[in-house]
Image 1 (cartoon, rainbow, N blue to C red):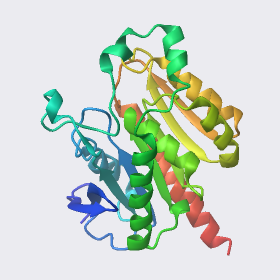
Image 2: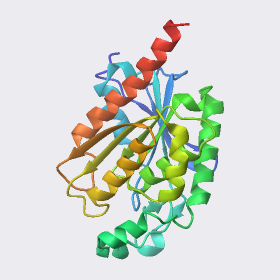
Image 3: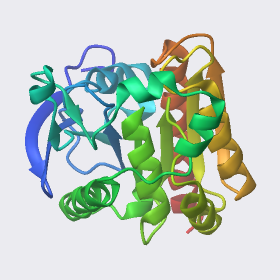
Image 4: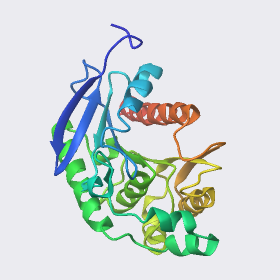
Length: 258
């Protein structure tokens, strides 16, 4: 069975306290790398799951060596009229769309209510994932889209150990002072960041501000701007596949040098 015709296995489970979809090649029993991707505000918990199939079939190096985990955010948006919608913390979307540049700058200094709780939940997921797979944190990539990207960034900067990498898909800067202070301890961490120049929800300038903060702290940021809005375009998926393959290549080099 080649990488072009396999059907990935999708398993619904609970890691820590979060419901998740786990996706991997049917023959993957002992992954070399795990990737945790957190969905955005308002999306169902399975929103990003199709990305695994596209990435695994596009990059042969990843097919039998990488396990993807897609956690479901704990806050239900059913009371707001979105039966399947989930959130990591509540958002005032009307406020976001009305913000002027000064308001966006103030938002970058804020720590959202509920961030500490979901950071703890994500830590619990990562701890159990590490126990199940035998992978240390430096073999686990954390990332996400939009609000999920903000959570992933916050987690990557608060973890006791450095993760294998950070993926920020249409994210934004929040908690500016705390992130700036903590980012210095993550100098050298590989980061893939993508952002649409016409993003109507999280303006491109917010993505640039996050990039600049991480670069100034010494993180190794691959920044991919694209013409488009609040989305994940095909070129971002290709860059993500390359980013993950590089994490495996670095691991192979370390093994050969022993």
